[in-house]
Length: 217
Ligand SMILES: [Zn+2]
Image 1 (cartoon, protein in one colour):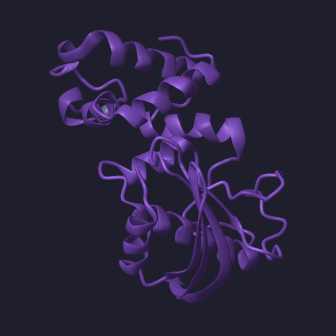
Image 2 (tube, rainbow, N blue to C red):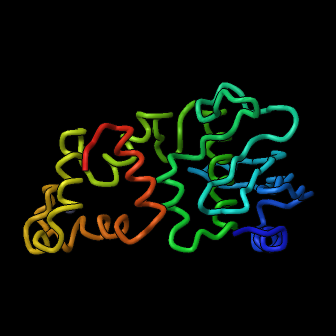
């Protein structure tokens, strides 16, 4: 649950963004803010200076905020921008975002996700490449998220992982991990499984994504 007051406090905790104004509506708060900062990436200093609007639903983090450029759009020809009316930013898959926010879902952490998005864009606008790798947009990006998370390469293998996740439980613990690392499951991917099973938001997004990808549970 977000209020104007705790949003203002979140901005006090960060140096890269400042809040200009808040407009409170029935179930959302619209923030106008400036993201102005420099970041060193591989021997280069990138400067970010953007006016940003953030639409925060009061039920945060149940729904994630929407973020877009305020006024004139200076970000163009960038694939992580949706073709909607506001050109909303694609900050990552929902699973990626919840994973970065967990376990506390602090709003200042969400602000730093926006800052990283802007650093990536600044880097991309110069190099046409991403400093730390990139995820595909839309459905393919969702698939990549889980391939990376579980260290698998195909939907078939993801299906097997999901069956383990929901059916085998602790019986797997002392067996070799499915990923081929040679370590016992409990010392390898178990932590990643538990993270999903013990986190309501991750579990919800994971289940929705599996349905999208046609992976059955
Ligand atoms: Zn493993």
